[in-house]
Structure formats: structure tokens, C-alpha cells
Length: 137
Image (cartoon, rainbow, N blue to C red; front, side, top):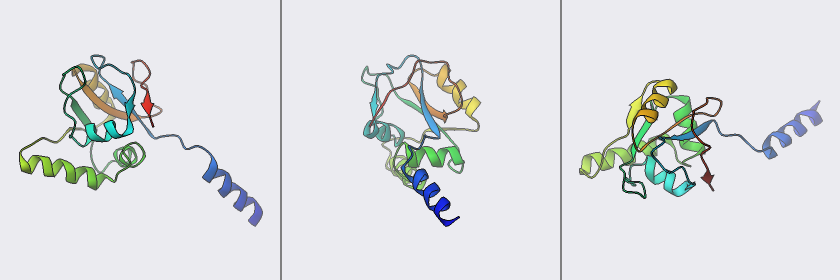
């Protein structure tokens, strides 16, 4: 029994993990590959414009939601409180704003679909009617 548990744990550790969240973009945004660093800058509100000059509108789920926490950790490689701290710093210094918080994934999809320059995320099993998003490591 101990051998089975050991091998199960080893297989779990070495199997590729699938992400719980996928990034979605408005159709007005060129959906070419975005680097991990660029994605981190966008969601921390340090990058405010797309390469074509269009303003970036960021949508996130509630900071206490499981999907938001998983997105921050897996895609942005930061903890949710660190992201919140960056938003607070830019708001209090007058240099930026927070992203818009939505309540559900359906609301997220609707906002991203209807807002030019928008970016957000949904769970990986949800479908968003848009071309494949490429994410560079």
C-alpha cells in the first residue's frame, strides 16, 4: 500500500498541471502572444495601453474567489494580496486605478466581449467565442 501511495504522489508531482484559468481578450485586441511579464504588468495596472495605443481595460473576479487566487498564483506568479497592494499603491499615489471587479464568469465574458481593449480571465473549462489566445512563457 505504501508503494502505491508513493508512486501516486510521484506521478502527481511530475505530471503537467493544467491551469485553472484562461486569459480572454476583446476582439479589438490583437491576440498575438503575450509574455508572462507583460501579463503581470497588465493585471497589476502598470501597463495601461496595448501596442496599438488602445487603452487596456482590466476585469477581475472578486479577490476572495478561488479562481482569482488560482489565476494570480498560476498565471501571474504572485499572491493575490501582492496584486492588491500594487493596485492600492497606484490609486493612493494618483498614478493609476484598480481593475473593475465582476461577480461571475458570465459577467466577465460579457464585459470583455463588449468593452474595446478589455482583458480578463475565466475558468479553463468555460468557453469564450474568440480565437485561441497564445501565452508565451
